[in-house]
Length: 113
Image 1 (cartoon, rainbow, N blue to C red):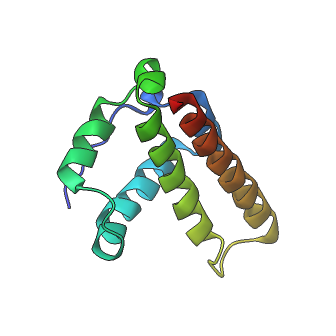
Image 2: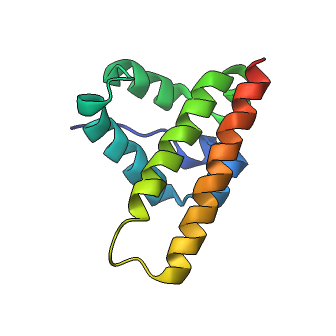
Image 3: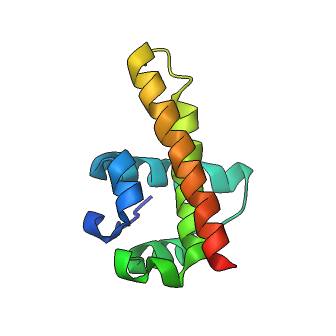
């Protein structure tokens, strides 16, 4: 699947603090390429356009998309917790980041009113 990513700096600081640039793209790509088959909550071309247009400066103008993006990354990080190769320390860090991203998703929904 050919999926273009927006510039990494475009994402709000909470997201960039907990997810590295490469990992963000991997998590979003993993969700986009796998989950719509089982959980059809997105139309991939529409999601890709919105993802490419998203930026830190417009994040508060699109709180639902921001919340959805936080949720996607949190969900995919949760899947990583089951990986056998994950050390205990890395697992604790990922679990903490996953929880903070989920909380950020809830906060973005509160911004939406």
